[in-house]
Length: 277
Ligand SMILES: [Zn+2]
Image 1 (tube, rainbow, N blue to C red):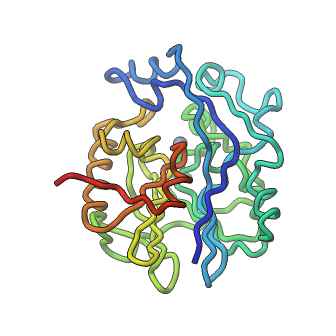
Image 2 (cartoon, helix red, strand yellow):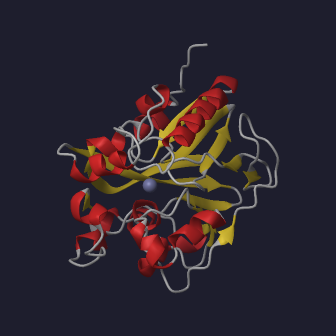
């Protein structure tokens, strides 16, 4: 089994999104009208497993540079985000470069459905795509677009498979789902960034690789328990960060958020979290 980091370009967001600031509605206003930007990578993950290739998140699409790709009336896309994705950086193109055909990808698991995680579902028409259903329902219709999702950009054939969480507790998480028969790949439900957000934990030679999604934008923000500026419930996000720290106290854990510039290096060096007691 092997895990690969796939960087599908860069997204610039406001510093106030990476490190949330303020209380209540002010947090979102600080994101929209903050002056300082921060460029961060957009990672997706590819796991080569004996039961097939498993992809975690699909990264972003180069179509983000087309005028009108995002809803023009949406303040977040107008004021608070800039994407830089080249066609050759899309996940399908990079898999091809690695010699992996999209037909070899048995499953795709989405941590959540924001565009920089679900932007290239189009590359996986033959795969089973797993989504936590409350997250999927949140994307639907005009309400979904208000919340920043792009339901109208998802492929017409897209019909997600639910994640059932019927495999009991795993570490500090009360429920989990075993993706593979040997239990080496599990999905856990750390909510916060979105209410039904999930992460994928790959255990390889006693080290757990925590493919976090957006539980925090960096390892530093996990250690300092700083929720991002767009989580609907910052207190719940803080509880989740505490729970991830508890998980990492129980077993050696390499923490790999989707937008941490150091995630790729930590994966390569098997750099586990060190947490004081
Ligand atoms: Zn997100």
